[in-house]
Length: 308
Length: 271
Image: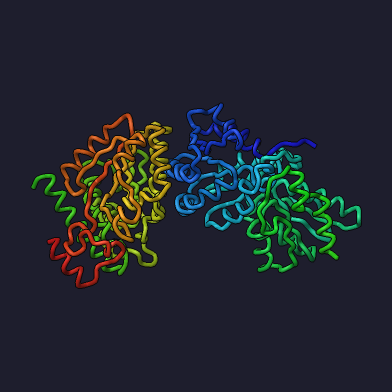
């Protein structure tokens, strides 16, 4: 299977949408890592390095949006959402500005840098702000299409990308639609709703379970806010338990969004698989995935246990 | 009446409106609204800013970002006088459904170029507007008023750094240097001085003037507008509560509206 990182798609898509002269790109001294440097190579006059100052980057982006530009501002997920939370709230969300924030190196798959650089709460932070929309693409193609589509999306948008390469499971000919989830695999016994590179793990775990006679539906839900309520609701009608899977805390992320929606509309049991209210640590991505339960085997095991 | 006398007359009327607004709302920031009044009157009525109240979204307009958003009663009174909206709207300040929010909201009121309130965020947005003008090849200026207490916030210095780095000569930062913040004197709460040295170090062209002296205000703002090499900073020494004797230099009036009796006495002084 072809492997590529979603952050690579951010850089490539920026070049494409850069044809629009309103597009400006800002970074906080991590442009080589977030891949916004790809844009800089093609459109240096519309790229602005803000230095290691995420709050300033976000505030500046707000002022640019107020002046008719379409800013894209990126840094590591943990910094752009955490350090800049206040200007995101006051300057971007409060004024409902057309600013796209991209948080790369999300989750624990950033690896060796350790817990200080791993974002376990960025989805929760961004999802809680009025007007903010949150997208977590599952692979390179989906990330590319999401960034391209973001040009037309009004209001603030947070796109979460990853450092690590992950398998490509969607097609570049697909269409990205905000608020839409996709069924990757049908199943009748239970279902997994996943996002980011966990959608691939969900598929693989479902295959393992299939061998043991458990039929698992897998839904890729890149749009966490707005959530594809219709698809989730239909899914919940067909199974008695739903699992969510994300490289994020079990508090406030995709699992939180699905729980909040279903608890009011069709309260089936929901089991959230993610980081159990803990920080990550240094290690290779694979070692970390083993330790924190993000391998296909450990996901399959947990599902089997819960199904009883 | 000379130009300066007529500005002083406008300022008197603005101060009266501020006090009535605050009294009617029963809450709000008196001291800082009165200290910033002359700066705003100079900008809007001293032929400094290019604006059209009938076309508040005009892309070519000069921008005003009141980074010390809590002083918005002064801005509201000035905007209404400049023709952005009816004066009667002033009396709805801070009331449910009013476009005159407790801190300025660009989505609710014409003439508000940026929503502010949480300190330090306005100047960062102003920097973005100034940088955008360079991308869009527009000639507008961005005026940003920050409070001296606000200069405790780290984001202010990040914004100054960007302005100096990108040589945003279209940015004019004005410090309403009234010397007081909620918990006391700026020099006691968190010493921000020396201000001029700080701005100079951030590659600003810095001016120090009396913030209630219209000749100084107009001359310096005009000079700053002509600056083509660097951003400008104007440190305007002001008096918190200016114009009302019992409010002047009193930190107690930072976030307190005048009572009916105080309003009566204040309006008497501002006749």
